[in-house]
Length: 505
Image (cartoon, rainbow, N blue to C red; front, side, top):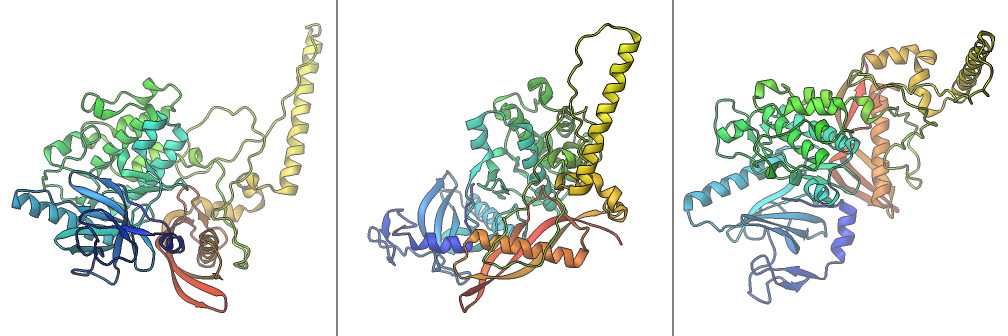
């Protein structure tokens, strides 16, 4: 199910605009200040019957209702916005009811233990008047199923950027011993910023190789072994590949023969051979014939250079005044004029590819008598013009040092830094940070201040050569919360995470 939430300061302003709330029983509207429903008389405040924490919630609108569950938008007593998920009790069999409650509680407890920027955070988990609820991050956006239904097949580069983030979060789950088991387009939310959120952990479970279960996932996306009650990390690899196949081709596997995935390149000729081959291997029916780990699949599917041809090196300056916020993300380098690209070559997944030197095209000479002498003169002229072009480009690059040329000239100007980069290790780094901004600063300014603080902490701890992976945006693990306010300034605390190349001394 979709889950939604915006950030803290925005929540308060939106919560203040709410004028009516819904009764959790009859779902009819009531005044914002109501304590009991004016229609049915029930208590409209949630987590008030058997409270699990200090938060109290009211429902403001219905997002989605299905046969077994519902998702609402709601606010707490401070005006913060949450997604409120309810398990609808429509069971007649006491055993089925008990199993459903157990699964619902297990999902809540599981999510409360996870901390990853691509996974919604759960805040409360409670029973109220016999109904079961959990509250989580309110994610604005739409899911991949909605996007592919509206747009049809999706551009390869766009899909690969989503795939990079999905491989990252699924790899995180596997590192925790968890199998997601239900990867499909409708379980992936895309925020307005473009960031990915993986939702609905209802059938995720600990990996026990010999244990069989009853949850098969979603037909069309689930691999053959899940129909036998077995699931391994390779099962998630298959389901992710099936999802990517759907996005790249527009071919819905739920409408096709089971386990039928023609090579994507045979359906869309513009798809790269690398992407087509990686998906074909990941979609093998026998788990042992697929990639062994999500990292292997990620490396085969997504070369670093394909996602970010010109990696951004973070140069952290001393913290600027909060009144002059920096952009929320590092600005993308402005590419130089692009010549006709040479044939692509296979490169290691983590090795950035420097841009090729720009050679200005030479105007063809006027037709002349085809003698050996004139042909030789033309060849000499072409060589001289090419050398002049390269010389001018080299002078420009060395003198001006444009950002796009840094990877190319680093070996010349700083051989120590380049050799350090080659020995770098890509790791996930989390920091608990505090920032102080003017009391009227908006959320963009707050985020910019946290990003600047994160960059500064990376520089202090790992030095100037540390590189933040631009393909995995820095995100909040714990969103900003106010810890102090005085003299027109407000201090926030948050936990941020990012993927960083750090280098051995």
